[in-house]
Image 1: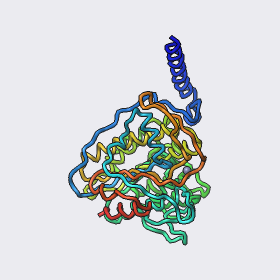
Image 2 (image 1 turned 30 degrees about the vertical axis):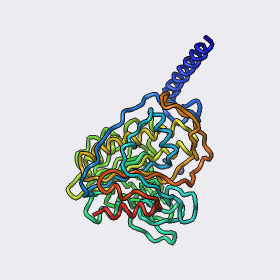
Image 3 (image 1 turned 60 degrees about the horizontal axis):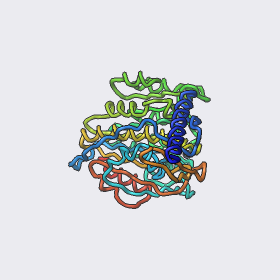
Length: 385
Ligand SMILES: [Zn+2]
């Protein structure tokens, strides 16, 4: 009897909690602070994951490089629990481990980590695809374009933030935002989506870089609906003034943009696409379990649609990893059946733990092992032909 009473109270309690979570979300347009308790999260809308067959062939025509900014195994494990013990990431057949330290720090930032992933060179924190002595080094996207392929990036931050920047620009510091934008506009990028109109047409130097890309024949759009209507590349889509909104508020912009990217980039010679779940990092910095989880789900749903596309294509290698982990998150308790977690955070910064690398498709076995983030880049580069 007593037991029943306790269970009933608990049930009522969790029902109220679940209700207040929904109500909190609805009250504010901004998801970050909508969760009553930052260290707990209960999944309300679990999603179905895809199940795909890895292609048998060995030819790599296209490469899709997906980076969860601030996504370590701790965030992935927690998300797996919250979605009831399944993620699209479960499909990956070959897994490796990459070390993330930069040229000057054990704990990297996104610029140095991105430079390592994009170019195969360790550099100092803050630098964009340059060595510590400021020599520009070629990115995987530039390598692909040199080989006649199309290259693109779809992100949820401003397109000139560190992770997209390292693929299409070179500068001594990530703070050179307006310079990065000009370089990106002249890089030959075929598909670029994310946020950041402020750095393109509301600039301190008075230039309007959207006019530069329009003059080059790009479609330039500022909403998801307009992006979906674009029939031919190249395209630049800047769908907010700075970063895109957090996951719950921006809806399906990332998966929709990636679907459009695949449609426009696909061609006889192949393509290189970088996809970033940029705001997983923000949830970590803010020590918000809920925001972190919602961003991982958005990223993992995008992984699902990429895998389905790649399974049909048969000549596409998909690599998923992070640039560093953020927040020093620990999964303390939870329940797979109840889809809930309790975590703690040990820092509001990044941390230095090595990261998983998930590989799927032709040559995915090349990515098994323990190696540097630079070696991961080298192994991808070897397959850009
Ligand atoms: Zn960060």
